[in-house]
Image (cartoon, rainbow, N blue to C red; front, side, top):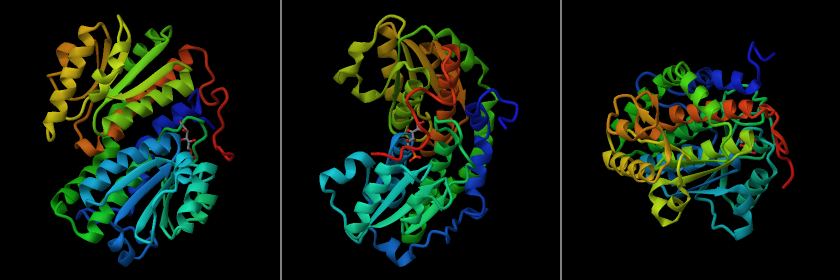
Length: 369
Ligand code: F6R
């Protein structure tokens, strides 16, 4: 049932290109148009939306953090992202014009369910992004966009996360399409790029042996830090979460711009720091800033593990280890940049003798608050 893999997690990591392609299937076409008729929220209602609030837990929350960049950029609708467990205890401001997006692989996470019930009581419309047909969260939502990752067995979420990202991009692009946006051309380009992204994920998967080797060489370490900017920041958070839950190591993700506001004090000789580097094309300011962040931490002794686009030569002098990913538009980069971090955590867990599919103290679906 593990299809020749030692762990479900490895199998599920390998299934990501298909999961991504399946989640796009029938929802985008060659002309760059999206059809999400299955989202049963009338376009009239979507046109009126004046705020998007995303609620989720854990890895799904990280997908939500990335979605915010896409939604605000393409639709200009303000978007908040909140941990479901915090959301309903703070009296959030919601009304009929708020679109709440609840992201959940299992569809049974109690905190997310409670958050969406609260949102609906306040009159907000709830759209679920969910991987499990007929589960509680989609049943209780106004609409659902299913991710087509197939069953995810390993406790640590991998393919579900990538498909949650795809679903979030689809929602963002669809809102842009329905409401009209000055980014019409960009939307068509992105839809085209999305249709090729499964191939890019496949490509990354084919180059992971050096990442595995590196992970094994770090098995004795206590701490790994992760840095990113823009959408690379939630990717850093996700890399750190994977490492905590699988390798039981102290891992933290930071926004690279926050370094000098505290975390840089943690840098010491030979501390592994993974840095997710945005594309040097497009928003190149971001890229240049992170290159100087890498320089700063390396000058203080960090062992830098740099995840950067092919052809990005600026990072080479400062990378102790360089992991190449295919060139992708910035907003879509998390789909490829997350993969090495999943492989890294999985291999570190194995090297440390941990139970990969069933980490200690964790359950696949968290049905208590
Ligand atoms: C991490 C992980 C968890 C889940 C979280 C939400 O790898 O799997 O953080 O993402 O418990 O679960 P769902 O998506 O089922 O609501």
